[in-house]
Length: 115
Image 1 (cartoon, rainbow, N blue to C red):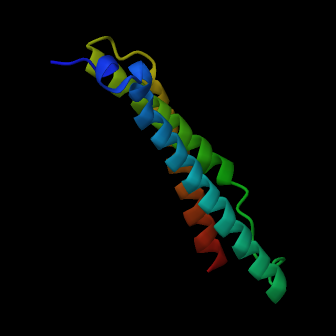
Image 2: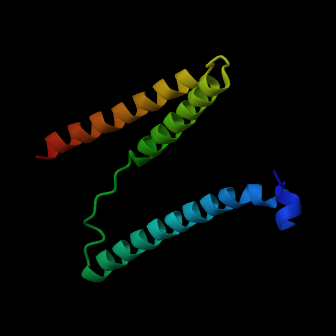
């Protein structure tokens, strides 16, 4: 078998190509989301409906819950794949699930009182 270094002359740089590609895709997706949100707000301003849109003040709970859930799941999966002890990942998963449950409970409660 021929090593990559002697074949391509790129050395270990080829190892980082998938990671750079994933980073570019994530940045492009984030840019697209920001651009579409900006277009939506500009359309609301042009129609004069920007003040009528109610902002959800609990959005930080949703974002925080998803973030803690993702970190906890990543920790648990990493620990299981490496054969080590699970550790604090399970606690983070349950905190994230509790935050998501609270967000959806409050959203439903506000929706039923508004109707």
